[in-house]
Length: 447
Image 1 (spheres, rainbow, N blue to C red):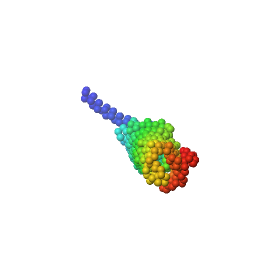
Image 2 (cartoon, one colour; image 1 turned 120 degrees about the vertical axis):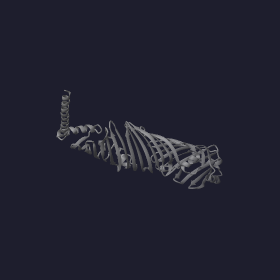
Image 3 (cartoon, helix red, strand yellow; image 1 turned 120 degrees about the horizontal axis):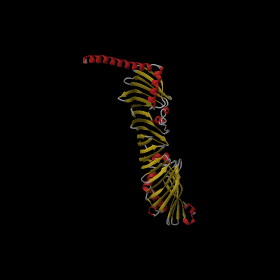
Image 4 (spheres, one colour; image 1 turned 90 degrees about the horizontal axis):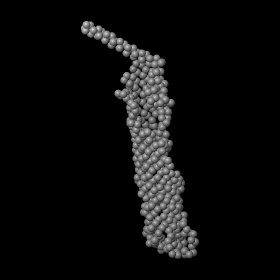
């Protein structure tokens, strides 16, 4: 009995295996036949579009062809077309992309791009490994897709102005070449840009910059180290909700090279730090002996000793003291209002010459406060000066200084009842007039 049952079981098991195989083959053939029909093709296109729509909403499959283990398709969104073709089992395909309008894919970009590479499965992930060409440069990239999208990309030789255009940044004053590296992991973008270029906007300078960007949830933080012909600048800041702020630190800033902005040919180098906020469009800055702000104008206050002051303005030091004041610089004109406290004239060549001509030794006089005020442009400065006490006074009205070393200055010098009218012109000094103070119109001494 048992032997007959065992024999029957073996027999029926063969039929069951055969039946299962036939059913499986039937289902497979049915699916293949379904895919090879217009109805099946439409169903498959819809499935693929649904998958793609998860990552690229609005994409349409405009062409689909496939066999038992191969396929080719064309996907289109707006003006952008991607062709994909290859094997189904295991999935291994090539792709070619012609992006004519990046703004169709993302509102944050514009421009064109060509790309190519391969798509394959790695375990349960989809991997896209390719190369893209844009902005005169090329980039290798690798994208890993599972429940999230991770990316690593690296490229070089990009045209800086074209990159800015693609990022919708209108900044026509820079040009150059950029290398970049971009990574996206866990919803955080990190990018590094290395740029060599030139800046032209009133001032002209070469520069090298390394910029790090971090982007998460539309919030951007950045750090940038810039080496340039005018000095070294470090920026760090953030961008969020259409608002951005940036702190900066400038080292060895060459003031003379900033003359197109500052108008006056200031000398020496300086360090400063500050912050820019887009909400008010104001740049605030501060150095060791000055501070101020810049918007449509530049306004600063300063306090320094005589040696520092005359070194910055690039003329021979004639006095020492605690010098402070305000400088305002507009587009084509600047003004200044300055006072020197505890003033002491130096016993230099100029002061000795005045002593020789007038008998007045300014280096031995207690002149107290000295006031300066005037205006300047990018060619010359005009200024008034007044120093007065009970014993001595010095007055200058509309003295002219033409950069870099030409000057025409009328000085009224009084000690006691003696008044001298002196002409200082391009290194020469002469007495134009000597009068008794009691006979002189005092208006010439009004500041």
